Length: 199
Image 1 (cartoon, rainbow, N blue to C red):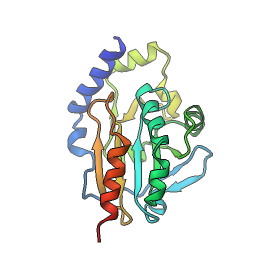
Image 2: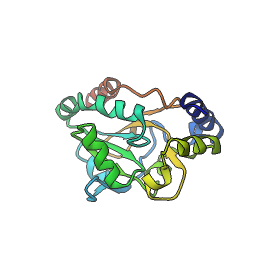
Image 3: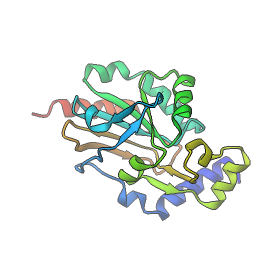
Image 4: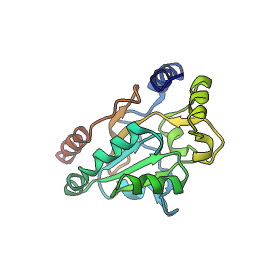
């Protein structure tokens, strides 16, 4: 299996596992989970969204090229988020030390959280088990996801981006059926600008 086949298989699993139907959408309440940042400090999502709009970006891990490209693009929008009193949290199942490396390697100026127990991924309806062929492919290229995530599972979140308002309600949701495609930050910033205009 080559990389493109692995990604196509991931797309097929997205449909087969029903993530499209169960992932949280606009108008639903976000789960209030507590996750460690890269230094191990616990972060309560509700503590962040109460201060203003919260952008939550779910990514697969620092081993994922598409995820790294997405995270790097977000670097260009931290000032725009600050002007809107919005915060950004990026969540993956990686252990904190791997999240730290992802942040350092990509020069990220925002917080990355570790969801090793998949509490957030399951809470948002995004977690899925990799197909055996995909497991074999990642194993062949040395990407040992159960070790990187420290949970012994071949489970990942589907990439997704959410905006949560100060009450915990989801007001923007984008779930990526194709892991090669990601929501552009400018779309998210535009959604927050609309949110800020609400009475």
